[in-house]
Structure formats: structure tokens, C-alpha cells
Amino acid sequence: MYKKSKSIHVKSSASLLFNNLSTLVLPEKQITTYAVVHKTVVNLCSCSMSSGTGSHSTSHKQVSCKDPSITQVPSILQAKFCTLNGRNVLVLCSQQGVQMFESDGSVMVFWYALPALDSTQGLHFTRGIAVLPENHIAVGVYTGEILIFKVPPQGTNITLLDTLKCHDQPITSIATEGAVMASADNTGIIAVWEMVKDEIGRVAKINGGGSSCSSVVVYKQMVIAGYGSGHIRVFDAFKGSMMAEICAHARWIHAIDIAPESGLLISTSEDTYVRVWSLTKKGEEIFVQLEQTENVAETQLTGAQFLDPAGRSFCVAGYDSSVVVHYTKTE
Image (cartoon, rainbow, N blue to C red; front, side):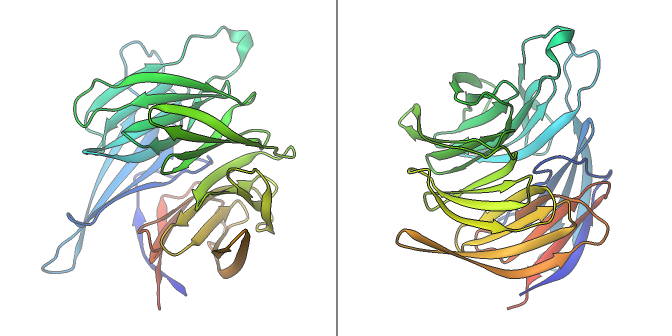
């Protein structure tokens, strides 16, 4: 079904984080940019293809959280490209707050700092990034809150519109499909939200069973979640009921992603395997089938992304590796 194709090399290795790989594909420019977090920097690698010769050229850049008020460069927990109406932005979640850059990392356009804490309150950070309609971006916080930002088509007039409260534990992952959003936390609890006009309300709460939920996606009014226990569970987004449970991996799942046009799902884990699943929804039932398993030898996998909506190709990143491995469909 898939075979390994040419890999991409970034400047430094990937940290062991949830969802540590993001891609920005610009078909009209034949450019794909990859973002992988290494401690305090984000490695950006832009690959362009020459239409005349078919050859590739790459350019590299490292982006860090920058602000005159920061005395020590903070660790970054997640970086994600967000495609909005009229622009693309790179969002960084760190121990200090949220920063937004132009998609090439050249210019910082927004900086939101978390309130200062005393030494008794432990670590504070942001984590979990997703796009909502009308150029809204949701970002999770260690308190369990979700920050909602409004981003204009151009310029730096980015504003914090709302703060959603539901979780009691730090946010691990956020995903959206249209106006439906799912947020997960350290205890595995998932909250489902829906945006109506500019108002976001909670429509369901799914109990986690105590195992951390590291990655979520939303697909056809279903929430698909990967857990530290190695399970993948599929829930009805509005009823909160479980539709399927898969014993997918032997160790912690770090990332899942969905190809919305084909219903293909990929999952990566610390067990060194990436697996491809097909999802078919018939009425109130969901059918899941394992399509392919690939081993990336001696590599704890930290991120996975499809490179097109149909799932014709995908890539994965792994801990302590500077290689982004590509797989392409053979059919």
C-alpha cells in the first residue's frame, strides 16, 4: 500500500513530545515545509520541486521564542502550521506562553505571555493547537483552559477573544473539523465543543479512564483519540459514546492523523511502529481495518502527518532523529 520514499533531514533531532511534526503544503508553489521541535528551537525545512527538472532544493531555518522580557530561552512543547483565510501562521507553544510567526518563521506577529508563577506552583506551559472557522486559533494551557485567539487576514492585530474552561488537568491535544473541536487532557478526559457564530459551547464530555490522551482528531462527527496505554478509541462527538476501541500499539501513542477524503488514519508510538488504518462509517457503526504496519528501527516515533487530504503520502518523525521519513502510496 505504502512504500518508503526519499527522507527529509532537519537541522537537529526531534524532542520526545506529543505531535512533534507539522507540515505546510503549498501545491501551487510546489513547496512543503516541515516543522520539528528540538528543545528550545523549531527546525524548519522547506523543500521545493523544480517543475522543469523534477529536482528538489531545501532550505533550513531555526525559530526560537524571542522576547526582550525573557531572560532564559524557554523549552517549546509544540509547533504547528495553521492555515487561515488569507494567511498561514506558525504557532509555538512554550513554557512562557504562545508565539505566532509568519509561516516561514521570519517575523513574530504575536506574543501572549502566561502569568508569572511562584516556585511552589510547578511548571506552566501551553500545548495543543487547532484552527476554528473565521480565523480563530485555539491553544491549550497547563491549567486545563483553552485560549481562543482571533487572527486578522494580515497584520499583527491578534486578540484573545475567550477562555474556555472544562478541564482540571493540563491540555495535551486539540483538534477541529469545521466548527467542531475536541480537547484532551492528561487524565484522558475529552471535551467536545461547537462554534456557532462567535460563541463556543461544550456539547459533550468523554471520560478518559485514567490514561493520558496524547493526540486527537475529529472526523465525520467522530472523535478519534490515541492514548498512553497504546489504545485508539473512536467516540461519537455529540453523544460521547464509544463506537470502537483498538489495541493499536504496545507503548505510548504520540500522534495520530486523518486523511479526510479517504478515511485513512495513521498512528505512531514509542514502540517504533507507524500503522495505517481505514475507517468506514455506516450509519451509527464504524468499521476499522488495519491496512499496513511499518517499523522505523530503533526510533521512538513522535509525530505523523498526511501530506494531502486523500492520504496519498505521509511522513513521520522520531525522537533523537533528524530524519523525517516519507511514505508514498504505491497503488
